[in-house]
Length: 423
Image (tube, rainbow, N blue to C red):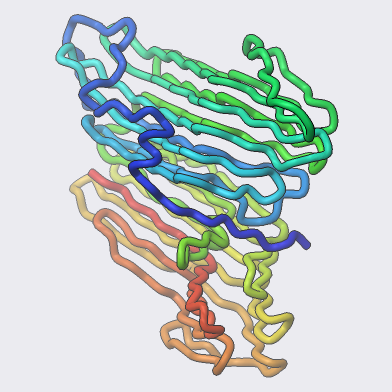
């Protein structure tokens, strides 16, 4: 079983701007490369962007070590949109610390009609955990991804940069390490291997996709990968007559008192063009969410398709088993499903059919939990089944919301499905 981890977050905007050197306003976006002078019809173009500061993957990473300073533009046919996030300092379990993290995504439409999507991530400093060899500091880590559409078609560009790498031995002055060209890793024996400037760009007649990771660190003692300054931008067509949206996840825990115990796991995000009739799924075998709560068989899945006379989509989040308090509360077979149909005349249909809760056992005794009634188990938890929220263009369904009664007030949602089809 993976051990619990917490990430302590504190946002200090002024300090962050000093760390990152400031972020230019949307109007000061980098000049687009290859912009067309002729005006184009952009009504069928969608722009997407997403970025995070750091992410820990594999090795001895505990559950909940997710993305820091994550921000996203999920899918937009509009421009002059900006999403950002900032974190002043983060402790990374088993890895070290980061500071001055900022992400920013924005969209721009030029006078010529070109549609641009930008994504930028920057981290002022990464300090790996101390070892007998000393400590390693990487400063000024930045990536930029750019995708756009103009009269000549779809285009991409990416860039990454590293300011300085310092190795501080147990005795003596810090040693600056030369920064190699991208694709040439650096290994600090017994400590870490650094991979710099990993990028990917694709474009064709229907889409442009670009992503960049400024730094990947393979932490040798734990076998963990640390990704730093990740950005991704997309421009694509095929969203005429409505945009699909939403997500599904098996679990989602609330941030309380600046402590993040778990994000959405495993997260599936609906493509705005649809899945084209294909079921897309993600799954985790087991997650320890902390507070004595362990879940098994966690999954998320989604499906969507356009028809001649309608568009239809569903999201599904499921948990096979829940164990709270070492058997004090056991729940089986939680499923949330949100289905939306958008008709050709604009009419909308919403459905929660397929949302279910299996058996519930509290302190060894079977419990009846009506799908529309809240119950409380004294000293343990409050259970709210089938929490439904009607949204513009869709709905959100939570199979079961658990509020812990241990004094923390922590709220954990199990089985989450959100689906929208917007005009």
